[in-house]
Length: 203
Image 1 (cartoon, rainbow, N blue to C red):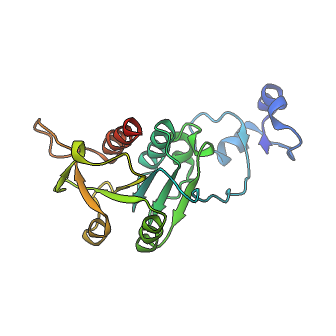
Image 2: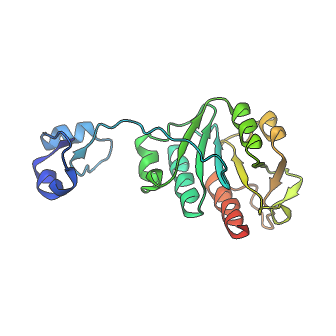
């Protein structure tokens, strides 16, 4: 831990037996990526995480690039009782500082997994008895008609392009969220909130 004198006085009870090095306010500001740092900077190991063997609800972010959306998705998944979040393919690091802040602590409450090979991930979810549902604008299955009582993994695409055709085609169904206004689409966080809430209610 790198701490300023002020932070050491305020947070000494939280530091436990972690090795601590006192730094100046200027050094703490240089180490932090926030405008007004709290004066605590930690060097940590990235935790090892895995989904449970028989997950009931999983959020899968495919090629997500925005750390704010990634953190929000983790927070939503935690709030809706999901068994984990998977970041599939090339995308944001879930331990990016902005993602961590956007998750509001939820990243420590459920498994957050990275999977480089999306096809392999989908195959493993199906092998575990989990239905895979892709969120798409042109999905043939409206959300209210989906059977969400089954174990489900939701696929959410990138902010700019949605899900690639090969990923959506590998799902058990392509699901659309009925919209009655003039909006063309929803952003990934809004779509995830609706779908994960629907699954949570079905359970």
